[in-house]
Length: 265
Image (tube, rainbow, N blue to C red; front, side):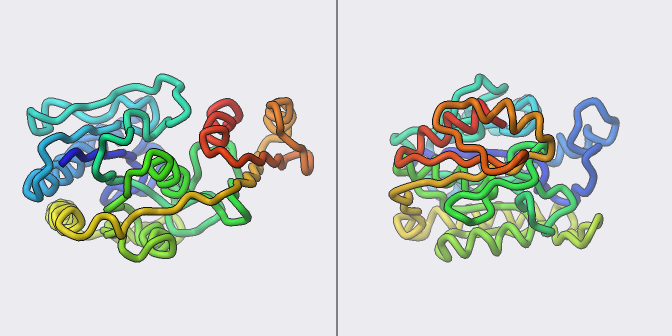
């Protein structure tokens, strides 16, 4: 079994402040270590369930967060962003049997986490076909584009509820509950156990039930916080300006949506 893992940091156990996500800040060191430990728990659960090839995509910030030395020695790690439109899912293709998302978080326009956002901090929200989009949604559609089911998502409680609306068969593991600027979290070691068991359970289930169908057509609305960024992005081919801050892009090819996002966010 070949498993792809996309790892972010804003949904790891206990994280509550932007300084904790920034490699330039002293608080970051602990959460870099926690991110690595949670990814290790994913690998352990996947291996128990029969995974013989695991590829980790470091998908936060500069994508150079995870300590490879602390992972199982047979795990492959993809570090740094290379501007491919798959972005947080770069490396996935149709040879994988399943995808897992760890450290994921609530989306821009929601209140499920003090770190809620979608892709970057410059957008007030992104909507796909009228629904507020999370990074889970964007990346789950990427997995669906190459016909790989997302079997398990680990992050904050509100995100897990959002995932269940897409497909109740996807296993979710909630680590944090966001309340305003605060988070309520279990002890990290308890979280590691829950992650390991959740991944193990997800890969032993009928993973075909976790598949998400791609819509036939995509209308993507981006609301920028800065009108000057909206102005610049309005020149992307096919982009329609709705207001000084809001743009709309439409396509029946999801790769074109990803290409657009890679140039305009």
